[in-house]
Image 1 (tube, one colour):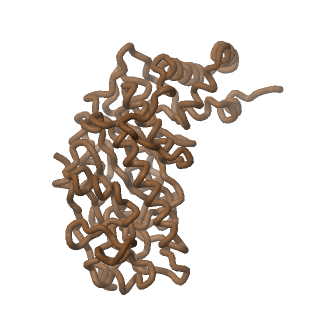
Image 2 (spheres, rainbow, N blue to C red):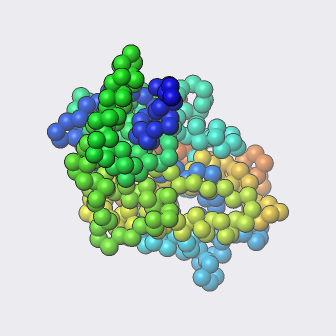
Image 3 (cartoon, rainbow, N blue to C red):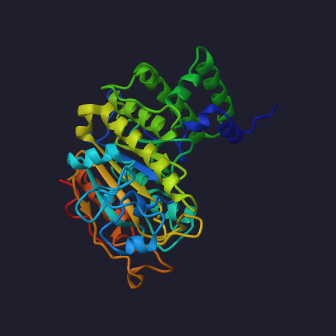
Length: 408
C-alpha cells in the first residue's frame, strides 16, 4: 500500500506525540524549563456555569433568575453552597477544593472571561487560547508564544506539553511543543524492534522533508527519555487516588508523573470536557464538578511538597446566561469564573469586581458581565511564577493590567 507521509502521521500512534510544528529543541542531559516552576492550564470545554460553581447567593437577583436551578445558600442542606466570604459560595460537589480554599491554597476570580461577545464554543475557545480578540489575526497560542519568547538552546522537549487527544490551540505555534495522549501510548510505540523499524521508515519516507524528519525523530527521542526515566511506571504518591474512568483524572495523573520525573515541564495544558448545560443543569453541573474536584485534589495530593512550585489555572470559554431556561438549564452566556491554585496563589479569597444581576446590569440578552479579563489572570501568573517576558508580546492586543492581589 502506498502511504502518504502526512497520512502516516495522522494514522500512526505518532500522531498523538507530534505538535503543530516541527521540534526545534534538542534533548539535553539535564532538561531545563527556566526557573523550575510549572504552570498547569486547565480548560473546561463547553462553557462551565460559573454561577453554579460559585453562586453569588447574597445577590437576591440570583434566585429570581434561577428559581429552580440556583444553588441554595449556605445552611440550606446537603445541596447548599459552601460559604466563601459571606457573598459567594462554592458548589457543594467541590468539597475538596473548598478545603483547599479555606487552607489558603485556592483563589476564585468571578465575573471573569474574554471581553469578546462570541457565544460560539469554537470561536470563543479559539480566542481565549490564542490570547487575542481576533481569531483570524494569528495561529499561535498564548502558551506557545510565551515558550517561543523565553526559549533557550537547552530546553527540554517536555518544556511545553499538551496532554489530551489533540494538541490544544494554546500550545500550537512556532515553538516545539509536545503532544501526549497518555504516557502509556509512548510505551506501545517503543516495543522491542519497533523503534528501529519506525526510524528506518521515517528516514525513507521523510528524506525529502527535513522538518518532518526532525519532528518524527525527536518524538522518538522523547519516548526514549520517558522510557529511560520509567515515567509510565511511576505510581501516585501520598495516597492519591485517581479515577481511571475520568479522562481529566488520567490526564492530571500523567502531568504529575512528568513533574515528579523532572522531565523539564514548564507549561502543561489539560482539558476537561462536556461542560455544556442547556438542560438538566443541577445534575450535569454536579457530575462535572465532582469530577473536577476529585481530579484536582488527587493531583495536588500526588505531588505533595512539589506543589510548592506548581500553579494551576482553570478557565472556560464563557459562562452561562444568568437566568435559567425552560429546560432547567442555562444557555451560552458571557462572564464566568476562574480558579487559581497552588504555588504563589494568595488563596482564601474571591477576587471580583461584581457587576450585579439586576436586569440593567446584565450584558446583552441577559449575561453576567465580564469585569476581569482572563489575560489579567494569566498575566499575573506568568509574571509571578514564570520567566521574565514582555506580557504585551504574549497577549499582543491586551492593554490592561495584571490582576492585583492574586499572586504573591
